[in-house]
Length: 116
Image (cartoon, rainbow, N blue to C red; front, side, top):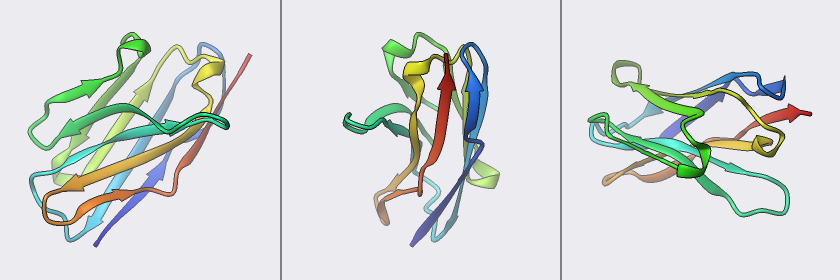
């Protein structure tokens, strides 16, 4: 079993920044994928970014480089740095974890609200 604990959500004005963190614990396999998804009311959950344990990343083009994902393998933590936030970024952000032994896991979600 894998447990994901998210932190860093909150309320910010448009143009501001937030830093989300997700720490994984439990029976973690060293080769894994972690990342972030988000879901706004009335919309499907969508991928924001993924990063594998080796460091390669996958990002959503529509974010135009405003979001940066990174990880600290020693701490089993993935970071999402969000800059130049827009009201349309408002959503619940979910941490994601997957490995070939444990399968996939989701965090509880952390609310990000960007005011106009």
